Image (cartoon, rainbow, N blue to C red; front, side, top):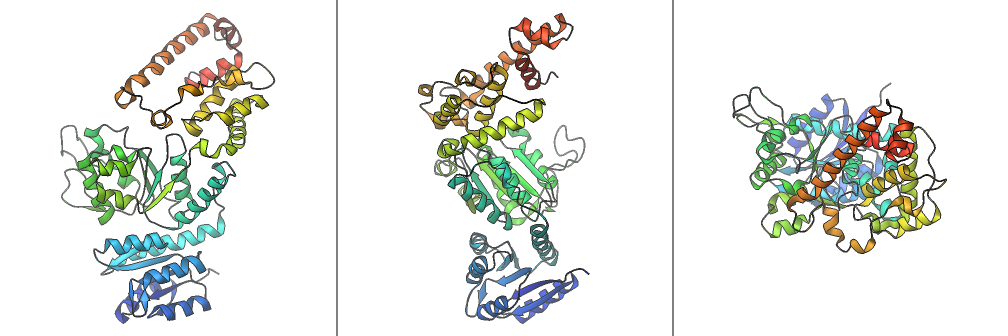
Length: 455
């Protein structure tokens, strides 16, 4: 027999209470009501609820007081705030206090039902699944705090701004927030705002109608619509042009999107997560990022620590990477020597975890001995890493957007590809002979083939 879900509705207006009781009752939910904070606290102490809906203004206090009370005493109970229409500040305060979501008066019943279903899905998921934070490797105090914060933020629908240097794993953090939340069965759509040409960005994000511009031969659904029912992760959000920042702000506030060339808006149910390695507050000061959008996406800020700030996690992370590589290659790999591990512990890692992965992949390919030695790591000189933030941003001095810097690896990669192809053809695709002809180990050749996608 299915368990009957229960909800507590807290509002001093009798008409609102009756409307919510009727609406939730039709969803098969048993509803109790309270007209003030004191009565609500008594109800919460007497019975466990799957959901609480509370008004902002109550005769004996604020709905924020009740949200704080539930967050501290009953953290497994999602709570949503009912606010006056257009009271964005109250909604933001509620989300910061720990509210799951908010709904405005007059209550849109379709929005309310969707909110309630999301809350119930969240509770069900907690009962049947375990958190997926094991991919965030490391037992340092910073990582333990990060995992705990992710678990807490997954309960909410508040926009989260994930801050951190390049390579720290901001997209992984966003995925974990999505996977542990009530939208886990919906899509997770990551978007690198810096990788989309500015002239195509509006169409990519919001969609377009046929004939709205030259080349628009058919209707196209934007990424916001693709993420409907799930989570949209806006990576490198600082790269959004100012005119699109205005449209993004409206989408977040109104929960509607208007495709390019469309006359009507399309309703959306999307949670927004965003990230950038840049100092967004400084960009706001410089007039390069809208302050109103900054405050809307930065309802809750989540900093992700750099690898050099948790160097005690390096041995555990390195071990996990080597195990993953062994699984991909299908053979046992040599472990790190004590000297190599010490060298990694002392290295500042301007590229963070991503750089550690690249270093270990290269070391595995170059290693001929029983252990990976310091020489196999080929670590850059620490003296050359005097400007860590600049290196981590991927932009070198005097090279706009890092374009010239990125062109050199591309050219070298093409030369490698041609040399390997020629050796393989000359040796009739005998990889052992080809490796000998190239003067590299068989493992190094396998690594190159995989990296260059020549397998």
